[in-house]
Image (cartoon, rainbow, N blue to C red; front, side, top):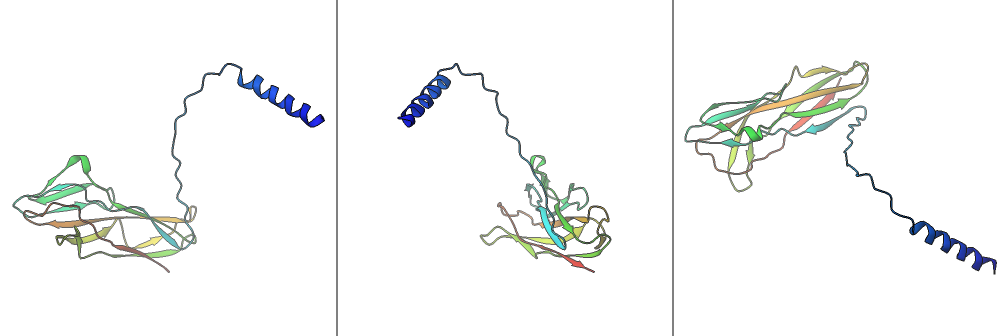
Length: 171
């Protein structure tokens, strides 16, 4: 008998709570949080290298992404699309305070569209000297990578991609 009284009392309490008028809800806004966690003796990609959108012409040219500030320039017969300006690649690494790190690049020979067309990679460049010193306070270092593409006369339309490697050699 006591269990029935307890259930009845719980039912009445639930009914009393659900019959009360609804309070105005506060609208919610979603926000994203982001963190980069570096493990000692690692290097991690933060951003890919992106040359942006390029319009070729009957004249060959080049497109370059600056490794320090990510700005984009061109030579020859290419037009850069301002709405898709691209950006430099960016990497973060960690290790012991004041440790020396040699950063090496292994660029691809070309970027490919996957259907037989390619764009030669003239070269990739670092945002400073290859030898870096890990910050004594943060125990981190950062590396920007830019590069230059050779855009052919009447280059075929498409999305071109390729992989490159950044190696951190801890001294």
